[in-house]
Length: 229
Length: 131
Image (cartoon, rainbow over all chains, first blue to last red; front, side):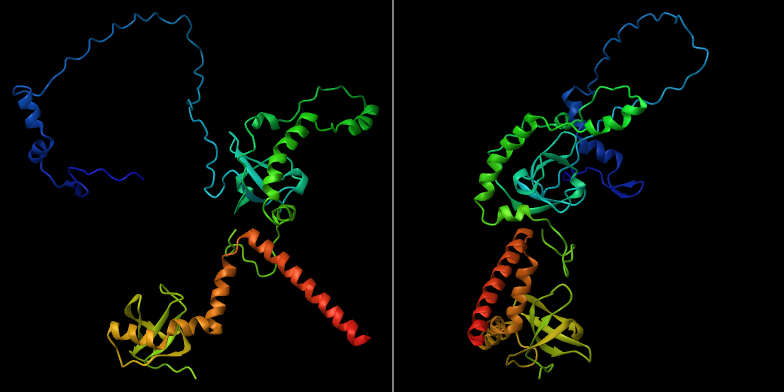
């Protein structure tokens, strides 16, 4: 919190202040303001009120009083990023199909989710979004200055909308098999581009590649509240 | 035998001064001692908060701070502690507790490597005795 400003008239106990009315008058310097203004307190005339527009009587009076919900102008902010998570941090994913995988953090998207990559060649985790709550931030950092992540945002990860097809009963079983579409080539190329610079940075540190390829698990005697990550 | 006596060096095992080496400077009653160290204000401590060590220094009852520090230097309490197996174990424990996740991984790799080397040597020795 910002340092508290010095109050001229502190409250000693509820309802009782330290300085009296006349002493406050002197403290605030109202006597000096009056003196500057020739014995009176400076007074500004009110700006002339804008002439009220003549209101026409409404054309339509609704029969029922319909309740209108209160206006809400609240804009949600993206989740506050933990101080321990900075671009290049190795994260441990705790839930989902990649639980236990150690993964490199790239940036936080506008939705608050974290953009993360395996790299894919090392542990099979592609460019993916992950919620901060399901992640442990380790203190191991990798240099990601060479990676360009400008083009990735939440829209990139939106589900592809298919055209609806009318299915007859017999076609129902056959069409199920064709649903899985292959990953578009651009996404594969994006993955390769991001991972290429990352891999050189990772290989420069001994054992880091094996570290990212291994899953994390709790072993006997490990107490999570006492572990330093 | 580790007796409670004036000059006995003890390790604080509970409380604000956890992990400090202190010297018993006087005994207050059945449960408490007056305890002092170069980096703390002389205070009373329950014996339950102290773990006695093998180190003892030569002081009179309730010495002045200067005499206490001089006696500790003369007996080389710090050196003796750092050389003792208890003192060295504490250092190792601290080091292990501060290991990072990556460090723990590297440690695991090193342990596996060492075990591999040991097993190879053992196999060689076994072959020699068998032959």
